[in-house]
Length: 162
Image (cartoon, rainbow, N blue to C red; front, side, top):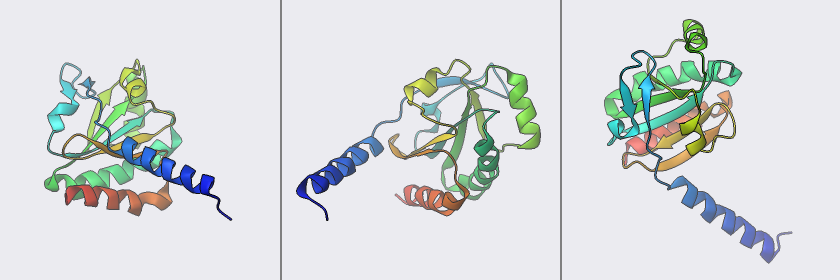
């Protein structure tokens, strides 16, 4: 049986989640893995739907997410979708080794000190943020779950149609 206090808690959590999902994405500028002299900022993707993904070479779920992200990048790029991944490894050779087994057809940026990760308040790996065309974080995910792939894709489709 639900009491009034339970209902108030649910309503409070709903509004807190709505506010969190509508927050402006935090701006960053990071080096590109493939060309460390090239700096890339979130602003470069203004007007696109961005799937911002934080990962590291030691992260086992990241291995699974890369195949899915490649597929999404290929499928929706022409509609204004961009996957931007941010790696947190300090040793670039670990990234290279990971990418030999799990190649990426999307942008990989470097955050070896974890400054951007701290700005986004990461709590687990991988963590992803779905950002709308106006630069607002609309969805967040901690971890990557195979059973949620279609849900993740529906979230992308929904933002692309706005």
